Every structure is written in structure tokens, then in C-alpha cells.
Image 1: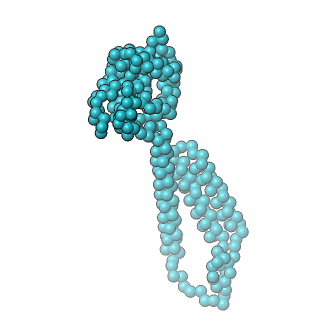
Image 2 (image 1 turned 60 degrees about the horizontal axis):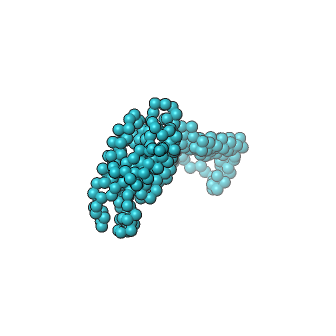
Image 3 (image 1 turned 45 degrees about the horizontal axis):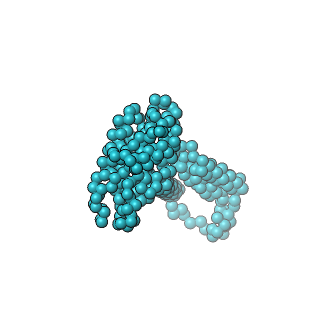
Length: 288
């Protein structure tokens, strides 16, 4: 305000200046706390309102803290704008500032939410095939474990899938062709399971399928056969033309325990057994 050039002097009211500073600090701190430590999903809106209120309170209270004592040697011109018109202009400018602030906060919040969603998706999905990765598998295992703990009648099945002779595809046709086969297999597996079933790529040419709500072995075997048919359908990807087979190992909580990570290990052992000798390509775990 001291930068004003007026025909007189600017007189400050100390109490009003102190009130503007204290009000700005208190309301600003409340806005910061509301944004940094949200209680609900709409706390950002309350924080934005408090921040704008802090700015306006500090500014307009500060504006009221000074007065201009005109020099009597100068003639005071008549008012060019009425007080009502000036008040309307001030309120309109304030409304525009508020709208811009709300729009900025809303856009920033949406961008942050989208960025978090993209990061989470990248962290939980295999970048090449697009199916869930091992981290997502671990989370799903935790969820299924909680269901097993809560309901003693709940049962799950773990199916470990490995592609037969996949190394030959890489050796004969190159890694690009092998990657294309993996992408196709992933799509077929994702389309071959129901909504309550889970598919993950755990590395190389190995996949895991988790099935909840298991009440009989025939349902699990039916799923394995459906996945075998999906994997074994003919391929025509560039130079790769023919059929790829899969070996599937199965372990269920009805027979092999209710610790899911142990079930995964047992299904992997059953997969190696299926890979080495099973005619149908699928094999249940057998401790013998």
C-alpha cells in the first residue's frame, strides 16, 4: 500500500493489520491440515475453500486496515464510480478467483487420481501380456486366505500352467515370435476364466489360475480342460503356425491343505508331473 501515490498520507490501523495476519495464518494452517490429512474424499474441497478464504480474509482485512488522509491543499474530484458499482466489481472479481481456484484444484486432483491409477495398474500387471503379475497374485492370495479363514466351508484351487516346448519357438522363430505367442496365450487364458477367477503370469512361459468357490473336483477339471482347449487352439502368428500345448498342475484346498502358498507349490509339482507323463496334460497333486 505504501506504493500508492496519493495527495496525502496513508494511515495504518495496527489492530486490523494484526487481525489480517493472524486470520490468514490460522485459516491457511487449517486448509493445509485439511488437504494433507484428509478424513473423507471431499476434504480437498474444504481445503480449497479454506485456502481461498484465508487469502481473501488477509487481503480484504488488510485493505480495511489503512486510510488515506488527503492533503487539504488538493481539490478532491467527484466520485467516478458509485460505492454499489465498486462493490459489485469487487464481489465479481472475488467470485472469478474462487471459480478459478476450485477448477484448478479439481483438475489437479483428477490428474493425480489418474496418475495413481496408471501407476497402480503398471505395478500390478505384466507389461508385455497385460495380465496380472506376481505382485497382484500375492495380493489375491491374501484376499483368498482371508476368505478361507472366515469360512471353513470355502475351498479354492490353484492351477499352475507351463507351455510345452516353448523354448523351441524362441530358438526357431526368435524372441519376438515367442512374445507374440505369450500375448496370445494370455488373452486366451483371460477369456477362458470366469469373472471370479484369477489369471497371472508368474514368469517366462508360466501362468497361475486361482479358482474360488470349489465344491467338487469335476469343476476344477472342467476349468483345466477349458484352458487346455484355449491354449491348444491353432496359432498363426507371423512365422509361427501350429499348435502349442500346456501342462497344468492342480492342487485344491479340499485335499492339499488350506495354506495357499503351499497349494501353489504343490500345483507346480503337479505341473511338472503333467509335463513329464500325463496324457491329457493336466494332473492333480498327489503326495505319493
